[in-house]
Length: 283
Image 1: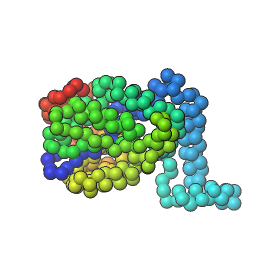
Image 2: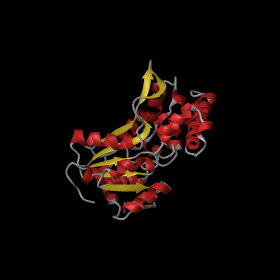
Image 3: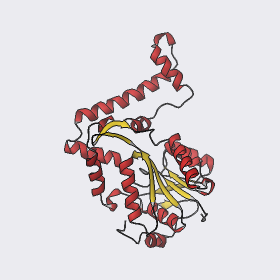
Image 4: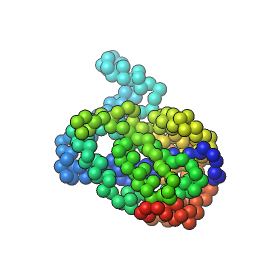
């Protein structure tokens, strides 16, 4: 890995930089525990996602079109040529469980999380420090809720040496009167939308994607990974691992205790991590 002017590094968040469970799942679990999100609302949300996934799978099954409604035929035509909808794809777009929840609750919850409690992989922090040392611009590109992503980016920035900043591109949420509407504002930051967001950012900031880096753990990250010169599959799903092998991409295995961090080109010098996480709280 070498430095290059106008190079950037793009990181997926959940499962790539942070250990499971996802930030959104942690937040939702805490709100359910407090009673801020009712059990009925969460159950309805879960049931809606299951129904949409099952309906999509049903449309993929060849059958006598005479037994299908006109609306089903329309959806089947729209889906033709596309892969079946995945669970995560539906969940990324459906935020109805947040409807009526005060925005301040999310902001307060994430602000109260200590940096170490976020569960960042030690090898991920070392990689971020290496990119900081190279002068690369860094961005989180994640399907998680935008307020969560921006706060994590801010916490990373605070724990890096002065002059280094981490930006965030994530799923924006609709709000009204200080509460979430349950709708997303714009497209969910997943799949092809990650590619579109990175391409727009690169054009606006004059970044050279052919010399840039990207890190992801699922097929939702594949379009983003394919648009850069240095793609890395981190703790990849089976499907992404298969895609990475076909493209000769490094596969990185990172864990919470830092015992794994292997890749084809070698890990950044641990001393560099210590130097560039010199400001603020250390991870």
